[in-house]
Amino acid sequence: MRPLVSVALAAVLLGCAHKPAGGPISLRSESVKEDAADLQLDLTYEPKGPRQVEIVLKMRVAGIVETNKLVAEVYIKGFNVEGGATRWDGFVPPRTPQTFRVLLSVAEGFDEATATVMLSRSQDSNQLLREELTFTVDDQGVVHKQ
Image (cartoon, rainbow, N blue to C red; front, side, top):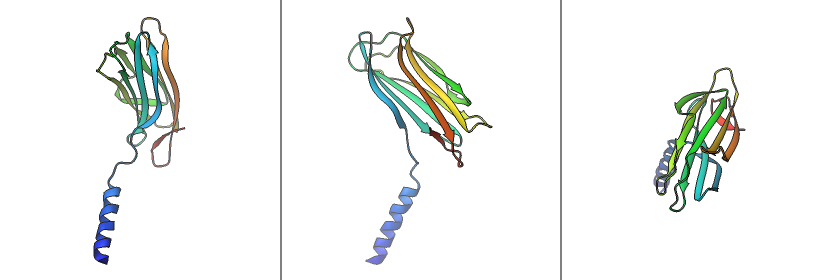
């Protein structure tokens, strides 16, 4: 019986050792009234690689009314853009979620970097979301929100 328990325990430990650490970490999840549309927003970040972090803004409409044209932007200091873009614009139609993502890396020589995520209406610049984020890099190169 003991060898079976040892084998089972070893299998469980090996299975856990290969699982990716973490996943997206929620920063903000809310519903915003945008004119006649009910806009659901989910803002997350996820450490990706050495000195890298991905910021993701997911947008979807609850209901049948499309949003006006929206503009999402990320303003950065101490970061380099590794993937995606720092600006997205468009509409969020019903049943067609939109995702804005950008992969950033903390620039060499910096231990701290900031990103400000903003979402506003194109026609009048009415701000729907503004989140200021500060990230730091630990000794292993992992990026954490401060």
